[in-house]
Amino acid sequence: MSVYYRKLTEKDLDTFIEMRIAQLREEGAKEDIDLRPALKDHYTRHMADGTFFSWLALDNERIIGTSGMSVVEKPPYFGCPTGRIGLLSSMFTDKAYRRQGIARELLSRVVAEARELGCGTVQITASDMGVKLYTAFGFTKNNNFMQYKL
Image 1 (cartoon, one colour):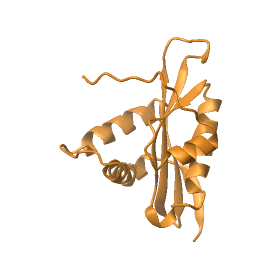
Image 2 (cartoon, one colour):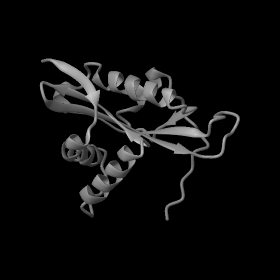
Image 3 (cartoon, rainbow, N blue to C red):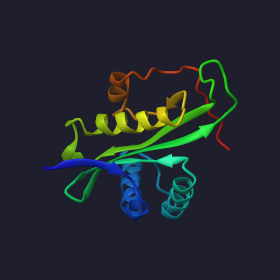
Image 4 (cartoon, one colour):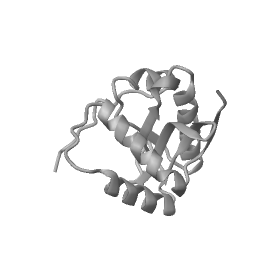
């Protein structure tokens, strides 16, 4: 095994999207539409404008782990004076490679890049499986998070 890390490129998108769908399935999402076209459009647009980036873990040339960070901006507030927030997503590691530090390395890389881009905070809606990783990294729960489904 020879794991290395690099940034996501447009040529990786089809595989990245398949891994994102595998992640959603593993988390129990109901698959009632083909999400591929919407994901392709989203990632293509936001990679182009710099508001989405991802680090990948590869074994030889096979993608075995993914991460994703969307940078959004809202009015500055005391906890985040830049108003830039990193929304973490797409944290996924192939089952055969789990518990080897790959997800932690991917997380370190996307968080560092979000910091360099001026994000004042990083947020994630964590799966049950991911809570331990994020807590160990230093994430804390925010009991104020609420959502209204449209």
